[in-house]
Structure formats: structure tokens, C-alpha cells
Image (cartoon, rainbow, N blue to C red; front, side, top):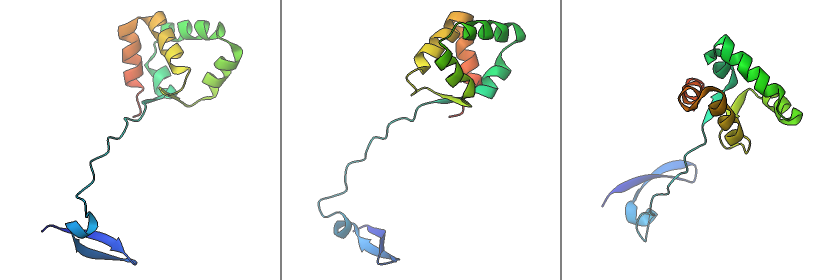
Length: 109
């Protein structure tokens, strides 16, 4: 019978697996994939001067509240409700392949 180390009363105790899991081991839990995060510093470093000028022109047309929130953020998170809009804007500005390159280069996790 396999033994398992468990924490009990402030110390590690070796116990039989059946004592720890009388009905058998629980099924593994699928963990959700965490959302990707992107560094804005890396994102801007990846842009050429011409691409950055295009970005600034597009940003000037953006809703002021969203533009300010974007400017003040240090990173972007794909779980953010505004991220699909940002990703779509990158694709519209630079094309799908180049937008993918830019995001990949700025990936944190």
C-alpha cells in the first residue's frame, strides 16, 4: 500500500494512501489557462518610428477615457474587456502578421 506524507498537528506524518483518501484519490482538477499579459514598454520598443507615428495618430482618435487608461497602464491583459478592441486596432494598423509579431515580442506570460 503506497504511503503519503501529510501535514498533521504541526508535523509531517507518513500515512497509508487509503487513510488519506478513503474513497480513492480525487480526480485531477483542470486549471484554467491564465490570460496572457503584454508589456507596453516592449510593445513600443518593437514598433518602428513610422509604426509608432501611426499608433499615435490612431490613439488621438480614441475615446479620451480609453486612451488615458491605455497610456497609464504598464501592461496589457488579454482578459481585459478592452483588449479585443486594442488587438483589432493593431491588426487594422499593421496587418495581422505584424500585429502578431508585435504582441509576441511584448509577451510577459
